[in-house]
Amino acid sequence: MIENINNQRKLIAQDVSILGCNAAIISQNNELYIGRNIDVPFTDGFLVVNQRNIKKTAYIPFDDHDNPISWVSRYGSVTANVFHLDMPLGGLNEKGLLVEHLALPGSVFPKKDDRKAVTPFEWIQYQLDNHLTVDEVIESENFLRINPWIFDFLHFLICDAQGNMAIIEYQKDKDGKSQRLVYRHKDFPEYFWALGNASYAEHIDFMKQYKGFGGTADVPIEHDVIIEDTKYQFASCANMLKHFNPEHHEPEAYVVEAMDKVNKKDLTQVTIAYQPSKGLMKFKTSNNLRMRTIDVNQIDFSPDVPRKALFWHDEPNINNWKTNLGLTSSLMLSHFAEHFWLDTFDPYKNDLKQYLAENMYPYADMEA
Image 1 (cartoon, rainbow, N blue to C red):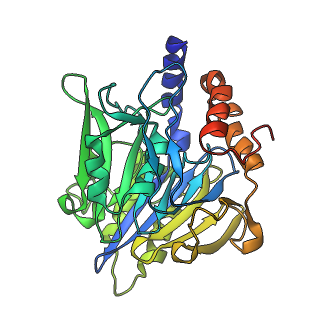
Image 2 (image 1 turned 180 degrees about the vertical axis):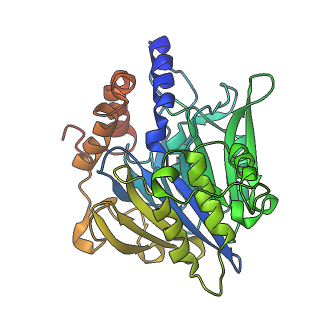
Image 3 (image 1 turned 90 degrees about the horizontal axis):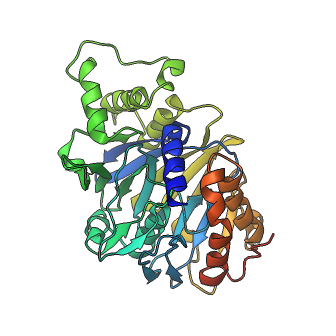
């Protein structure tokens, strides 16, 4: 089975461009404004409210025998989920910590060691549940390791309410082993505060050919050209960031415009604009282009309040948040089974359902 799973991982990595995603960041007076596109091949997805003081244990596949971490959530958060509860694509916690993933084919995660393990999207939820700052996320490497499971093609964008930003990648070193690379915002000009689906070093090197970045070529501006390649998308974002003028541009609208320029039509389902220091998450979707707002400061994250989810095309009014998450759970699981992870995920389907029912979601009707 392990050989089959490894072969399927290679197929996923070859087609991971469909999960492209992009991000661009502007800093003004130590406040960050983050624009982010979610590119997935299905329109269904949810915004999920995650409570404080909830005991959780990481999912480890039944055939892996790894050492899962357990924790109790310290902070509440709002996340975007398509695969399952507590496996978010990214989100913002009540203290202003933002954690997002973007696809990165060729990632090499650490092998098993003495540290506790967590799968990649659960790693995002763990950080949101437990930490306040970029530094705390970086330091968690000392005791926490990512077990990639079938998701060995990700890197991460981390921001906090104090205006700090970092990019975390896992790449192969000269000996073929995994090495963690951490890029801090202070290490690069602000016009490089963007991220796509090549390594950060590859994106920076690619920009050297363009005018204004050391080269002579014109930065691509035609939309049909930009969406052909992740490096063109990074170039588009970096070029916009280089021309940001606070006297003429409003930063939140500007990062949304940057995301619009790299919108992949049928694949871009959600565009989000975050302002971590204010606890704001504004979003529009492919089926509802109106910009809507979620203020995490207005959400009750106490553990006695039922967990709830919003179908991300809906308006975030009180009547549209659902607390019966059985159907939500099954719909998210179907994204594994009905799309490009069919063969890879199928051996784990019942195992994951049982795990979710026993460990996190006893109130959810997993047979729905």
